[in-house]
Length: 140
Image (cartoon, rainbow, N blue to C red; front, side, top):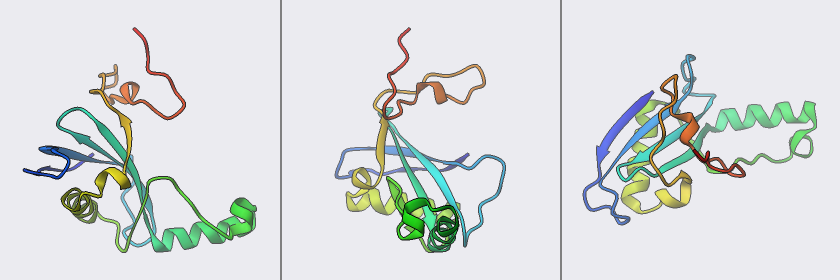
């Protein structure tokens, strides 16, 4: 789902616009205890990715790890490209992306997953065109 589209003007990294997509599926976000993947598509076709977490979600996951034994029995939690927010809403996500862009920190907080425009798939999701770490791009 598209969260927002903003023009950034003279961003320090010369990105003139972007589109934010919240990749949550059909379930609604729990603003106090949840995590969600976010994809940002720049005007030049580059696609970046991060996961947003609330503190309550991290606490809940660590507690469950005590039972499952993951992360040394819940002693730690980590996630690549993690952004922690007090409240998880579309407005918060849009504001965080805008702030990171404006402060010049976006490219440190988000991971580049594709440096080329996405291909369209039969179902219209475009997922086929995303380069994932460890995978080779499709050669056609």
